[in-house]
Length: 484
Image 1: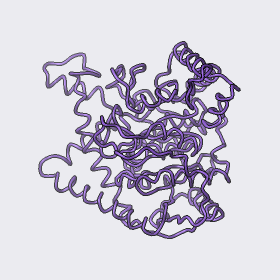
Image 2: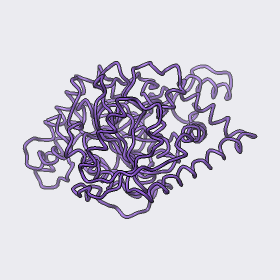
Image 3: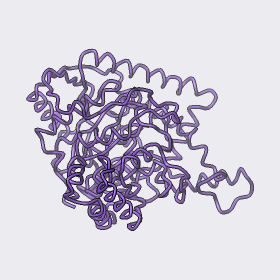
Image 4: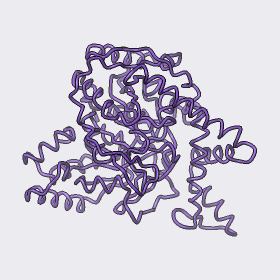
């Protein structure tokens, strides 16, 4: 039963083929068996409380009071605050922090009937592309434990890929849903900025962060996004738009759909396996009736420098709240208040977080704001304009998620610039605030998953999910699973 999709589980529970207690018990057993190897979870729900929630779900179903998702397990990235489990953000700074309230995403999932089985591991404060910067240790890729799972939502991706939960939440600031989804062979979507409330989602870069679902299939992502998305008055950046059903267009044929291929996405540096998978995907979309259009996104190469000015600048501001005074880690010994600040932050933050805080503080400092931060914001606008020019020629954009399949643990740990360059295809989407998703599309010669990226115009999540779903009706990459 742990290999079933979310859609299949909703049907099985509805017709009483299985109970929520059986389902929750099976997934908890799977977590106990596999997590010691993969380290995908930072905290796991107590078995008794999870089974009590499952029994309540079964009782509600027997009384005819259950919803579609009542009694189905899921996991939350440890960036969404929860009252029942610690919220660590993968950092020593918050290693023992328990929130007094639930994030909006957590509230909505609870209201829909989902049962939270735990909080998934992540790069510290979502800063990283490999899930190696977590204070709680690196996550291993279920397909090859020598490989990175991607980051920063690597714990959620690994948990879904290893069938520890059917679905999980993630967040995406510069590719942190799409890249781990691609590396772990699952489906993940980053919605339009503002679609999913950021209330209770610990901030990294506020103008870029966006929550989204991670699952086996596009249909499962659509189902979970129906729960997660929606206006929230507690989030000033939340989109005040009418609710919609992201499953509504899944069955629409793709005949005549214009798929744009940016020439900049196929330049030197693209791995041969990734290029092969891209070619195969293009051919498959042609067979589904799509028209392939060559487009250009000329500012693509500027996405990395712009992002790594804007994101650290926002991070340096957001992380200033962790000072040892109000909550979180506090140094045991200090001389005065200023010394407490310095020791607390030196002890509580890891190397990557410190690096980005230093960069962000520098570009916001007097004399450098205009030269760096202001220029990066101008480039951000040009990147968004490039996308709008491209969407005048096509309906969706297709490209790689990353230049290579997953690399080995530790391979780029000593060279952060090389790690940053691996985000070349995902960063521009966040800078523009567009929706995009990763879809499993092949394997490398090392049998490591490769995903392709679909990018849509604003609020066009249903169209992306339609393309991905139709692709998954004629391919089986999303059905393949690791041997672990």
